[in-house]
Length: 627
Image 1: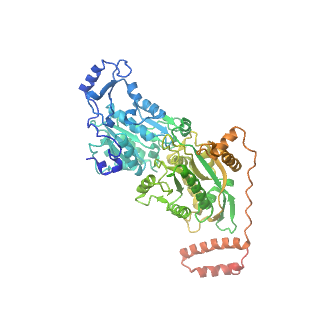
Image 2: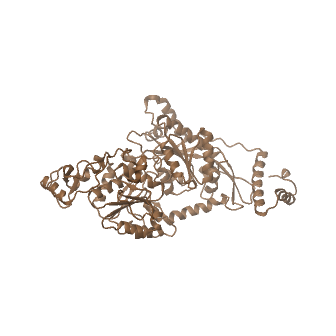
Image 3: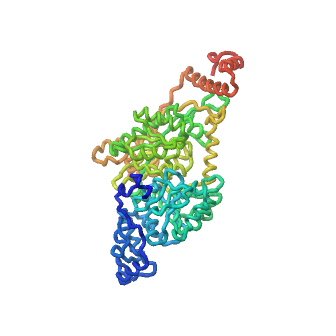
C-alpha cells in the first residue's frame, strides 16, 4: 500500500484520480499493432509516421486509461505534444506549452526561469509525465530548498497522476516500487551524494532530476552543495532546472547551468513577471504603498537624538532609520499594520478568505508583530518561525483556513503557496532584490480565471526597496551565492550597530512616528498622495458605474496617462510639533537607564552605585542636569 493512503489530502480518492494501470508504457508488440492499425500514419493529422513516433493513450494513463491497444493510438510527436495534458483535465498555459515543446525537443540540461505564480511546478510535472509516457525515464527525483516544499510538490504531483515519496530519507536507500519517485532537499543530497548517484544511474530506471529553485545550489558557504549535486546527478538521463528569477554568480558556477561571459545564467526558457502580467491570466497585479515616517535614534556616546524621515534617508542613515521604524515599541510599524489590516478588511468584502502576511526581520520582532495584530484585529495571528518544529503545519493550516494574518521571518519567502494571500507588510531589514522578488511572489499567484484581486505589499519608503518595486515587471538578474551573501553581510554590519549584539551598541533606538503615505508604486509608476486622493474622489463619484475591483491606483494611472489628473500639489505634511523639554529629558533618561542596566550586567555593580558615580562625575543628580 502506498504511504499516501494514510494522507487524505494526497490520496487518489481526494484528488478524484482513478486507479492507474501498473504498466505505463506500451510494449514493442503493442507498438507494432498500433502502427499497423494506423496504416503507418498519424491518427490525428495523417502524416507518415517516422522513427520516434509516439504510442499514446487515448484516455490518459494518469486518468485511469489502460495501457492496452484498445486505448492506444499512433501519433506524430507534434500532435502528441499539442495534446498537452488536456486529457488529464489540465490545460497548459501558452508559456508552459512552449517551454514543454522546447524541453522535449532537446536532450540537454534545461533551465526554465519563470516568475513566481506562473506554474513552474505544473510545467515540470507535465514534462515528467511526457518523458515517462515516451519511455525516456521511469523515475523522478525532485530536489527542493526547504523541507516544507517536499509535501507541496508531492501534493501537486498527485493531482497530475504522479506519486512522489516526500518522506524518503537517506537511511531508506531504496525507493519503493509503487512510487514514481521522491522529493528531497539539497541538504539531504549533499549529505550522501554517492547514494543519489547510485539511484539515478540504475539502468532499469532512467531518471529525470528536477532542481527546484536551482540558485539555492550556490547557497552553501563552502560550495559543498554544488560539488555534491554534480557528483550525485551527473549520470541522470535528463535534468530540468527551475528558478523564479534570473541569476548570476561571481564564484564557482552551479552545476548543470550554462553561463555567458558576464557569469549570468542563460535560461533555456524565460518568462518574467511583466510577460505574465501582459498575458492577463497568469498573475495578479500588485501595488506597493510606500510608507514614510520619522525615525529617531542616538549614536553611542552622544546625547542628542537624530531624527530623519524614511524617505530622506541615504546609505548611511537607512540602517538605523529602518531599525527604529521596525521597532515594535515605536509608532511606525503599529500604524502600518493597522493600515494594512484596513486594506485586508476591504479585500475581504469581495474575497472573504483573503489573508495577509507580515515578513519580519527576526523571531523576536515576529512575536511582537503578532501581539500587535492580535490587539488590532481581536484574532490571534498565526506565526511561522524556524524554531517551531510545527512551522510547516502552521503554514498549511493557515493556507486552508479563513483567518486574517500570518507572521513569518523567512519561512514563507520562496516556493510556498498560500493562494489567498492578498495584503502584505515588508517589515524585514533584508534589502536585496532576490529576497524582495521572492516575497512579492507570495502575493501574485492567481486563484483561478475569475480572480481579479490586486495585491498590496506595504513597504518602507526607502531605497533600494522603492526601485525594486518600480522594476518588479522587468527581467532583472538577481545576484546569488557569495555575491548575495556579501550584500547581506554588508547590510548586517551596518544594521548591527543597533542590534544589541554588543553590550554597548553603536545605535540606540529612541522611537518612531506614525507612518504617513509617501507614494504608491503601481506598474512601475509612482503615484503621489495627492494623485491617490484625487483618484479616490473620482472612484467615489463614479459609484456603482465601475467594477468593485477597480483600485484607486488603477484610476490614478488612467488619469495620468490621459492627462486628466488634477494639478493638485502634494498636501504638505504638518511639521511635527516641538517636544516639551520635559519630554526630551525623559527620552534621554530612558536611554541612560538602559545603558546603566547593561553596565550592571557587565560589572555586577548595583544600579545605585553606578548612578552615584555619574552624579559625582557630572556635578549633581540627573534631575538637575541640562540638555
